[in-house]
Length: 248
Image 1: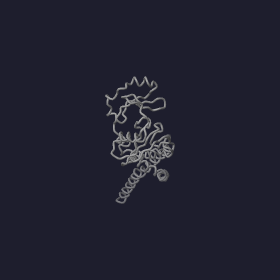
Image 2: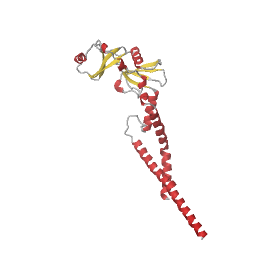
Image 3: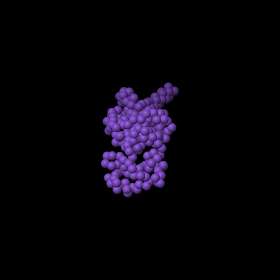
Image 4: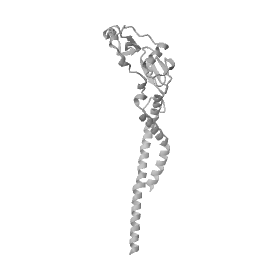
């Protein structure tokens, strides 16, 4: 019975130690599974502007663009308000050119940024605030897209639309449900540091302890179910033999 006693003791203390993390895993996993991932990504916050591209607005051919900007890379055809534009990279700079006139799109001021955010946004809420982010972006926005305007809308989930200040391009769409999802993911992978490094030894050790606790639990089940049944069976046979002896 030494194995039973040791297993029971270790299982009890292991579960007391890692039980809270098990609860966190369950809650965070349920949140990530139950919510639609497209909604979490914010796809429902924006219109599909690609459907609005009008070929009749393209009078500046792609050949002219490469002739004027031979170093252009990552060229795409996109929409900006009522215009069809070419967006591309030029060294480290992001640029946009009117596909009709060939004129560059000027950097956006607050009014233009809010107008662009309203163009992309699929909701009906009013604009609450807007701010230009030049450095130190919030965790939900990559520093690679700076400078960018953040336009906040007064609707459920505090949706925010991020617009490139250089090209007017949609570079981010976030709401509180995504922000909570990000925290839930961090809790789920036990990333309690900066949310960047997933090479997490803490997760590895807790997973190993969880497996060990499960193995010990199986040992307890074995003793509780199978060994107990075996003992009861032997006891029953002994009683039957005793009854036969008395009868004789």
